[in-house]
Length: 116
Image (cartoon, rainbow, N blue to C red):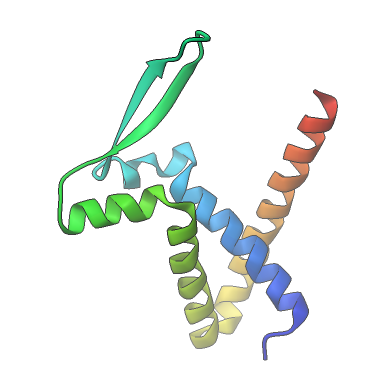
């Protein structure tokens, strides 16, 4: 049964896993076949990075998926919930690790904003 505590754990775990796929450098190799990252200097002299989706068909669809936080979040949710239903004892440590990492990332963002 999915309790409120599990909902919080899943939410934090999905948040962290989604960020891992969509934004983190460590998973750039997963996105590289589907994205080109383009850097341009804006009028204020700041470098802005944007993504160009490579290819078409399935390749473009995966590229769009990996560039959309909301879309990737749905698939990460389905994946984590699905493996939890099949192998709860194996999945729960993964969920806890991802949830703690997600919470730590949120805390770090809050602390950084407060100190700026």
